[in-house]
Amino acid sequence: MSESKALLMLKLRQSGVYNPEILRSFETIDRSSFVSKSFLNRSLEDIPLPIECGQTISQPSLVAFMTQQLEIPYRSKVLEIGTGSGYQTAILSRLSSRVYSIERYKKLVDIAKLRLTNLNISNVIILLQDGFFGYSPQAPFDRIIFTAATKKISEVIFSHISENGIIVCPLIKNCLL
Image 1 (cartoon, rainbow, N blue to C red):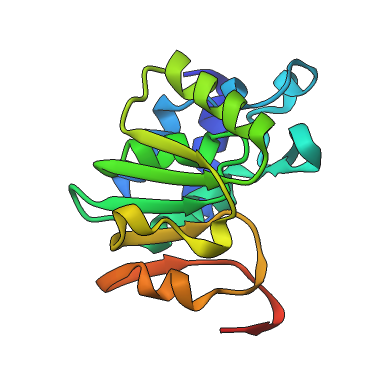
Image 2: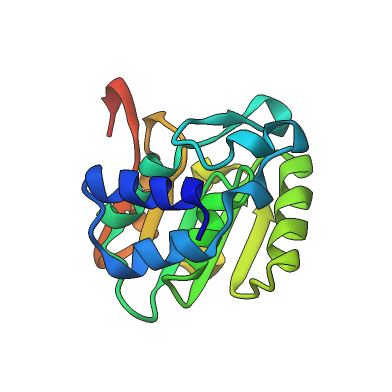
C-alpha cells in the first residue's frame, strides 16, 4: 500500500470509520479510477474533487461515513440516488448483493458504467432517470442512499424502503421530510 493510501486509511479510521468491511472496500477500490487525469495526483486526498457535468466526487471520509450509517446487512439490495463518478457505487458494490444507482446526467451514466466495467464490478445497475421518483421495479430496497444534499425526500422514496430499512440522505437546512 502506498504512503498516500495508508494516510487516507488512517484518516478514515480517525474520522470514526470502524467497520472492517467498509475499510477493506476503500483499500480495494482506487479513487484515482474515478477522477479525471488532471486530478490524479490529488485522488487520495480527503477532499471533494470536480467531475464532469459540474458535479463533484465526495471526499473519501464522507463516502465512508455515509456508507457506515447505512449498516448494510449481508445480501442486501441498495438504491443509490446520484451515481456521479461511480465511486460511492463501487464501494457499495463490495458491501451488498445488488446496487441500483440512478443518475440524471447521461454523460455520468456512461462514464460510471465504463469505470465499473473496467473494475469488473458486475452487481450494479446504473439507470438514467430522475432519482426523485426512486426505482419502483425493484422496490422495496433494504437501504437507500442519496449522494448529494436535497431539500426534500419524496414520499415515493419512503414507499421504496423495506421494513426496518435505512435511508441516508444529507439534507439542506430547513428541509421538508
